[in-house]
Image (cartoon, rainbow over all chains, first blue to last red):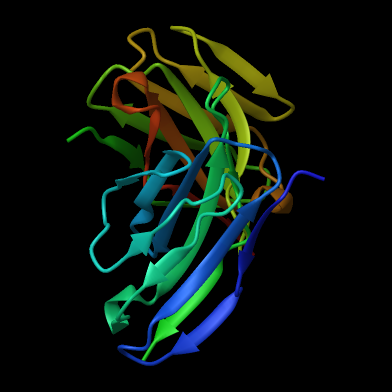
Length: 113
Length: 112
């Protein structure tokens, strides 16, 4: 079954404590992306990766890091989380060829106190 | 930068009434995609429109892509409770590494 998995699904943490949200896909997609979703603001892209070892900033990259060491995994790292990073995070994948539809993971709800 | 404006932000309807959401892009798009996000869920791909003036139907849902490939709409006829959720449009920009440019979404709320 084609899947995008994210862990953890829920996380409550404190300001400054480094955390990693994992994303894994089994569809062999080249393209992976991280979004955050906040009420009234829709989906805003944080970082994306066109392929292994290729990453690029999206619209709101400040305070986040990513890595793409292997095709199936694309972790999102918050080195020093702050309360304004409290949000719902989605990982998504997309084929490099058409039709370019995106497949989303189930989401990670992060609360930073 | 490139933007896709989506309106309205919310729409409250009685069950059985119609619903429409509109997207307008500041630039010409290669294609436009529509996604639905149920409450508590993740966005799920509904459809993609590629051709200028294209119209596609999925049961009670009608999707249109404008002649200039800058605007699109989703119309739901006779809404049902299963239609509740947020509908997003996303335009594909081939000139920008195949990046999707997302609308902010329209939340469909069925009045009790």
